Length: 466
Image (cartoon, rainbow, N blue to C red; front, side, top):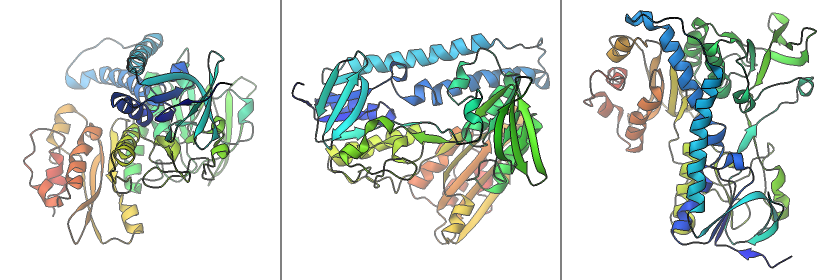
């Protein structure tokens, strides 16, 4: 074995935060190694199996839905049909283009050594890489950053391993739209795929163990979205504790579950398991470096993303933080400033918005009402429905489902959190986030001159009661 190759920084995994850090450092003439084990994951999970492909699928599903509603807008359209292979082809083109752009970015920087292979720790400052071409290399650095991300979590359900089931990744590779889709889990992933596949022609049922969809959200928000999905034709079974999965004699996937009304069994042509994400750390040999993990396998870090081992950091989903690409990007900023520019950034004081890309969209930033109450804060809660009076724009577009909700600190009138269930909620939430970052009281947004007619104008109505 040759002497180890020395780098100014080693990044294991090319997720959003890690790849951005690697490129930034290379442009500053640091010698950087970026290790990615799967050529089909170049650029990270977001562009290959998560955010980008799923939102491209959703765009097609929304267009289908809009065409079916054309008569409501005075437009006559012949019956619409789904070209599933055409849909998949468009999504694959979007992903391939972005993957190629990332590869070009990685290979065009002289200071960046992009390595396709699997890395594992040999010690706190040493990594072995088995390249995909079989070559084995040893790398060493005083700064190592882990950004290996997550994968679909597979629960230990009786019979699950004996049936063909889908994950958020494999469902995108189907040759045809499922005729009858059962979805385990009513979180972000489950609900997005449920509505998407329903619009493509599946009969969809969502099974959720808890008493509401989106367990972390306020109850009335979850109920409002659930009612929207039910009206659209999606079945939702709450308080469904799955006991067993099996294949029926007709070749269908069967799910047996307990409810307050007793045991039930439903069957479908396909089963989607959407029960969260698990960290990708198995092949890293973290004990060799002394890096500690949580009980669920996520890498333990502090608010500066430092592990318990000096010189090793974890970025993005694998660090147990919010599982959003934009959070991983901010992790890059924390490391850029703290490690390389003597800054003092922390993830403890940032506002990380979230958007569920159902229709209507659900966006949130800050504290929910129940989180604020749990912290013992003195709050005031404001809430208005989406109506022609509160959001005239919604009436003009025919997208009237939803509500606006805000949690206000009584003493300071600061906005502690905001939830939006509405068309374009993901775009709207940034307005509230900006006011929160600036520390401005809610009456400033109440009295802001907002363009008419836009969805954002609804904030004038939301805060009018102040």
